[in-house]
Image (cartoon, rainbow, N blue to C red; front, side):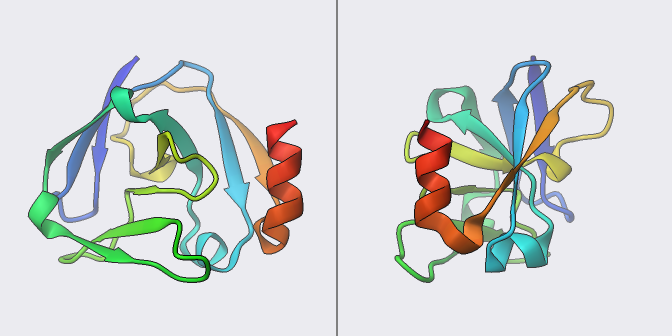
Length: 123
């Protein structure tokens, strides 16, 4: 399915190709829990930034491996480069345009214990 989404103010817009019944990860790490992010992993070649490159600002913490990208105007993280999936973007499911028709399942991910949980994810 071809879908679009973006940040709250509309400065950042993207297009993706996704399965109609994707698995989302609900992570409890410090940043995901506070922002309510639901991860929809999209391979780099199925993601297109339509507009807003100049509106993005980066934040890194902890290991510095994840590149958290926020709209500098409204502060929303509609997608970012996760540490767990270096070949994909993590798109915030909640930032997809309404009416997308996806029927996801949600899997919990224990980001507070990232190393152990990452091993479980790889299995």
